[in-house]
Image (cartoon, rainbow, N blue to C red; front, side, top):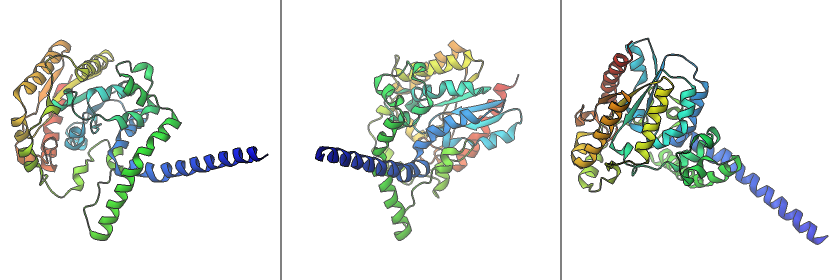
Length: 336
């Protein structure tokens, strides 16, 4: 009888512990992800693909540079033939975009404008493992043979595994709450609020919440920077290049027009990136353009440093100018 009581007690303790953990995730971690982290942008993109049924639409893909730099409302005002959507997503390289390729194709856009910088194809930039886990419920691994076992493990999480995985966000959520408290009590800088950023597909960038037109620390950081490995596009193949070609081929196969855009970069940064990396990037995109008959529009050095917030992102002034110029080019390319 005593053993049965012990077992019952242990089961009750386990149930209570799991219930507390579940509530902590639901009411502590999930609100952090939804409101104070750009990680929730990835699941919101899948929600967009499932709900967006409008015809004659154009998607703008890319990393945070596209998210911050493109105002789709400005482009919509230039022409009423298409509706334009900014689907930029932080740390989103071609390999990461493969995960949402099928969902995007099923939503039937007329065209996809893909923004790329040197970092997009290096294979040494950001590794958004958490994004892969958070979108696991939206993807079918049978369609994602390009991924290695590490990514497949993240993308293959079931509901329970994802719930357990989210424990890693408890500390960031706590840190964020301390930052909010410091803002409320000591008027310290307020953390960025990402809820609208994550769910907006037109013009909402996180830099709109900052007062400065330029990052006051960027020039100092750039001067001290000596390692540019994150921009090291190889001469030969790598996973990012292979993923990009898969994306282009699949979009074209489904009669979706592809336009490639070399994103604007701060000329001070571009000057310091080794020529070999830049040349390998340009050669690869020239080859893709020729092989698949897709247009490449080059904005890499289009704007001077006054238009940039930092190395990769335009400020509000640059965003307005770039959106108009890019929009006109895209509309011209899509004209019958």
